[in-house]
Image (cartoon, rainbow, N blue to C red; front, side):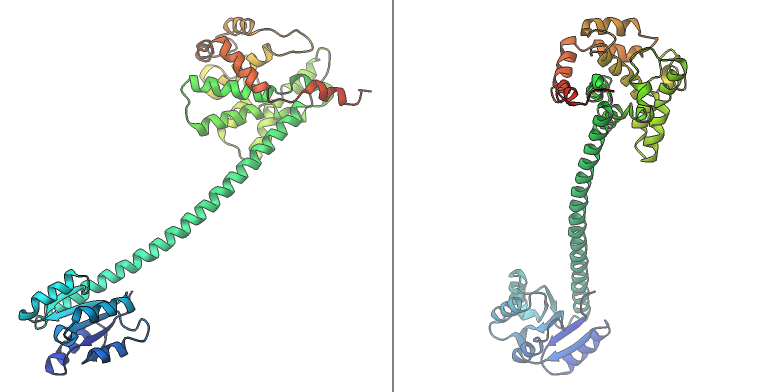
Length: 366
């Protein structure tokens, strides 16, 4: 609340005393002056007075010059000019020139009280606005800092995620870059199916990158076994979706990421694992990923078979529609020309390091 100090500039007399008493009923500190020189002297203490109530007759022959000086020296001071009927034209000039805030009749006490109250209400509003503006500036500064920190944390998170998946891929040189490729395939399929929210698409990317994280817990003897796996070894392999889901659950990643990790080996006909989910009970993002995963597997080199082209991949995907894959996702895949899929693969794998050169630097297996 603004200071309730009023300097009353008026001639000594019963009228000034009555007006002074009236102003004090507003819980104001009222100090009187009977000349310009005295009022200037009283105005020297900082912020003691918030308002000057001045009779036009006490402002001298050049009231505009005096009030202009006050404005320059005390810009926060409100000025209420009291005029008589014969001086109303001059008072109006002061009001229109911005040298006075209010104009009231010297003998109209109700008008004077109204002018004072209105001016205090304006001051209170301006003070509150200043406080709000200061708070808003502080909040915006904090928001900028928080946003910058959030961006930094996101970059650290993404870098950690990428390094984690690179480390996982390096356990099996033959499949290096698989996660990056299927992540891009999955995002493209999701967009074709109408998923446009950038946050959702980014969660699908993360889920695709992390889909095989559970394999960290699978022994190399099983994961890299050159021959066929025994039944108990297959049981261990089939644990990796649940193991991976358990790992990411501890770091509280979003549901979309968890769905891809846990359900990426479920099949549309219900013969997949780990829960034998069927059709729409399999989350859409996992159904999308399943096709993206198969597309990369078919068109990539494996020790046990040669690379197959995208035409062969399309034939196999069509053959397994309604069994392994959701027909809706198959249609989305077929809606894009094979040349586009080949381009996506090329652009994605062009960022993958030369693993052949890396593998040649590895020590020989004993």
